[in-house]
Image 1 (cartoon, rainbow, N blue to C red):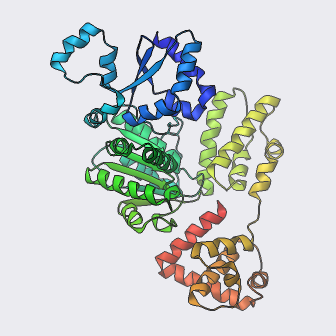
Image 2 (cartoon, rainbow, N blue to C red):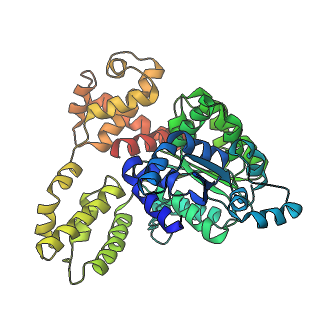
Length: 468
């Protein structure tokens, strides 16, 4: 059977297993040999092969049989072992004297996985989006430090800060930078084993390894990489067993001088239910905040995106002031901003019209309305109560305990800063308090924010959460 025919069969599996599963588990398979009803595949690791055997072997066999190549059994071999199996029998015998390692069943290849730790091989991580490069990342004041740190790590030199921890709200560029680092490392240091995945995938694979009693394969895979990248690490919070394994994996890699890159939606110390020892490890490297975008950065992103679309939609023009209008009006996150421009260019292309201000307002009416959504005092109160772990009824009630009074003043301050409500109206929403009480609370928080870095960080985090 030729590689081309296997490629056709492989593509036919997309509809059966789904695009994400196909990219992660089917696409990396390499057909090494087909003989006597047995199809042998090369796989990156033993854990990978076991997973495919359990979850997708029947689908693969059925598709191969339907294509006219009956297959009774699938075998999975790691790395060079598969190459040996694919060679003619005489060549394999000649090589035996020089190389004692033979093609072995998957269950006997854990040592092979460890011995190949420094070789380039495809790891079963999440697929990378080739659009997310450093060249396509627009740098501005809110993200310049994160960009510089990511660039330094992507150079692949000696580890200077470990881990690199990137955090920020939705759509601010964390995942873009993570993909950019991985893609850059593939170019600069192709010999490095770079594994990028989400925290949810890490947890899911660990649970499967526990269930199937293959924890050693799991440990072998994750502790043999040169660069480990975990996105959205906040999702392992509260998962005790997963946190335990993540902690030991983290320590093992750091002890070996391997680079770790982590992202989350908040700072390590702000992740609820994350073990203190993990918070401590995450804070021992460089922790970088991606701030909400400002007008200049949003406009730069739109200009770059518009230049790309002009090259795709020949002859399509955009009136002066449209990009500036969008940068002013859509402030939620970059994804919404880019999505709005994508829709605008597509619509203008379909109807054959110039992109004017009127067209933008008509085409993006729903997005513009959503962006105009006014933040309410009740939303601020709920978010502050949740952040400080106090009851909402206590926050607006008469209690004067310090553990309640300070969060209450924070909520008053944010209500004054983030809404257009008057001081008397804010007072009414806080249990009928006088406007002078609100003024005092706002002034107190302003003074604390100037002197106390923890208070300043709390305010910044809460603003980001409320405006995301």
